[in-house]
Length: 484
Image 1 (cartoon, rainbow, N blue to C red):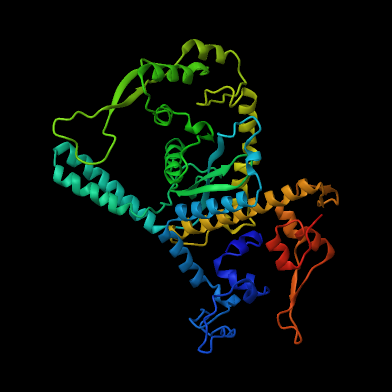
Image 2: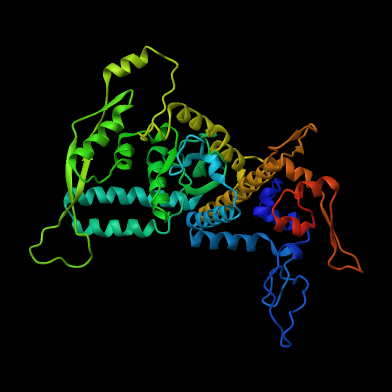
C-alpha cells in the first residue's frame, strides 16, 4: 500500500492487483523460504487459484494483493493500535537516520539550543461521502448514556452512575473514530469529516506522530491531549520539546495544564510565573495560588502515623486580559500575534520565533497537502469501516514518512557533493522534490529471459545518476555506482 501511494496513481484498495500486475512482485516481496526435507529451500510456486498465498508458497504474486487480503491487513493494524504502531515505525526510522550520521538536527533551527527539540503540531480534516451507520449508532448510544448519567447524578443513584460510566469506558475501548459533522477545513459542511492530528520534526515534513480523531474533534482540546499522549510515549525525558502550533492551543486551560510544574520553594514558583507573563502583550496573571505537593518518595505502605513529606510547591494563576494592553493593540491594526511559553530569550529570540512559525507553510502544512493530494488515494476513502479508515490514513502517513526521509536524504547528498539534478525546465537544482524524482525514474523495467531467469533491471543513464545519490542498499539493488 505504501508503494502504491508513492506512485501517485490513484489506485484504491480494490485496484492493487492492477497496480502490481506490471511489476516484478516475486522479486519485491518474498516469504521466508521454508527448508525442505533435504535442507534446501523450496522452489517458487505459481500463484494459487484462490489468489491467497498458501503456507508452502515462497513467492507472492500481484493477485495476492486483493481487496480482501489488504482489508485484513488494515484490521490487524487497527487492532495493534494505529498511533502506537506508527510512532514505533517512525522513531525506528529516525534512529536509523541518526546511525547513518545524517544530522537532521540542522533542520531544527540555527538559533535553537541543542537541548531544545522543535516539533510542529497541526490538524487537517478529510471529508467523506456516504453513510456510516456504526458512527450514527455510537452517537445515539453516547447521547442516551449522557442523559442517563445526568439523571443518575441528579437523583443520587450512585450504583446506576457507576454502571453507566463502566459501560462508557467499555464502549470507548478500543478507540474508533466517529464519522460525524464537524468543522471542515475543506469547506464542505455538507459532508461528514474525520480529523488527523500530525506532529512533524523541525523544519522538515517528516511526520513523527499521527493520530486519527472523530469528525467533531476540536483543536483547542485535542492539541493538548495529543501533546500529552506523545510525551507519555517518549522514553527520553531529559530534554524539553518545543511545540509550534496555531492559536487554537492558546487557551487558559491548555496554558495552565502545560505550565503545571513542581517547584522546590514558593520563591522559585513566583519567579517562574512572573517570567511566564513577562512577555505577554495582552494578558496578565491573576492572584497566584500556591499549593503544597506532598507524597512518599518510595513505594510500599508508610509507617503508621507518618506524614507524607513535602515534595514541592505548585503554583496556579488565572489568565486575565489586560485592558490597557488590549486598547493599545487595537490602535495598531494589522498586527499578527505569536505567543510562546519559552521564557529563555537566549534560546529563542523574537526573530527566530517569527521565522520558525512562518515555516509552518513549507513544513507541516506541506505534509497535510501531501496527504490530501488527489493523486494520493487518501483523498478518497472507499471504506465503510471506521477502523479501516484509521488504519489506511496511518499507512498513508507511513508513505509520507518514506517520502520525506528519502527527499531529505537525497537533498543532503546533493548538497554535500555540491551537485544537482535537472528540474522540470532542465535547470540544475540541489533541492528537487521526490515526486519529480519519481517521474525521472518511471519506466524502469525488469527483463528476464531464458538464459537469465533472474533477469536484470534496465536503467537509462539519467536514472543511474539519480540512484547513485541514494544509500548503498538502494544502489546495490539497482547496480548503480556511488556518486562522487
